[in-house]
Length: 402
Image (cartoon, rainbow, N blue to C red):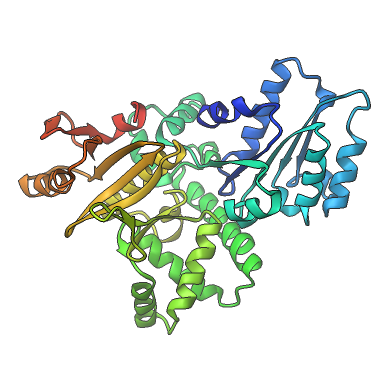
């Protein structure tokens, strides 16, 4: 088990602070493990075990906690009488009906340092703002980035470093895949079971969807067009031609539900001249790049989209807001913003010839500000700079400072 240090370093400064720490992310991305690592840090700092209450709603022993009253009663009855401060950690809290009533009440006593996790829209920012009245800080969690993937692989002695990046692009970053020792059939079945669980529990059941087959067709189209600019109208037209009629409104709703379940990620278009977000022609990416293998299969022509997807998730995991850039009639793959910093990125498999080089560098050359501009590819030893635009091998990008 590796430390998810990229998240721990964000959460540590809020230990013992009177706000709820809400950790959100796709199912099986490692939220339960992160909770255990937080508990370990508490214990190593000298906090007595009886002052730590950990509720994991995936365990049968906590099945009796159905609603907010059950939660409140369990916590208060297990709080030491002589403790002025108790650490409360609740995993998959969305499984508890009206959980926010108990959590708000416990926070108001000023006796608890509270951490919660969740995997669906009940723990999205918009919901949290309503449920917790601003008394929370959200930490978005993702599946393994490439460096984390390599660390766990080496720790498990599953394989040597050679070829790790190819496996990462194919199998993705779910922590649980490493127990299968790169048996492709087992990995694919495992990810497919996660995909179906998310589809059923976090989308179909939550939003009471009757036409599950249509939902699956729409998601599979988006997966197949990962990294391509698309619209609800385009999706509707394609599904009509291949399957049967579906309205644009239905497509938009299904896509929104899928985003809420973290199955997909969206990058909106940003007009670099007009300095505004555009309302249409966004890109969609997978919440984990392994979903392609598990649903429609992984083929060599998917490489460029998988590379873009991996870069996007890495940027998001490092707290960047990510859009796609539009300048005149050209596109910039990513406009990544954090606080006052900005980074422009082009991603491609290889800078194979002068035409590709001109295309990738040309879009960045049209940007007139002085923020860093970067071209990423799988090439080795390429020209490192052109008109101030840097090139970097994409694997090195994952390891170096952004």
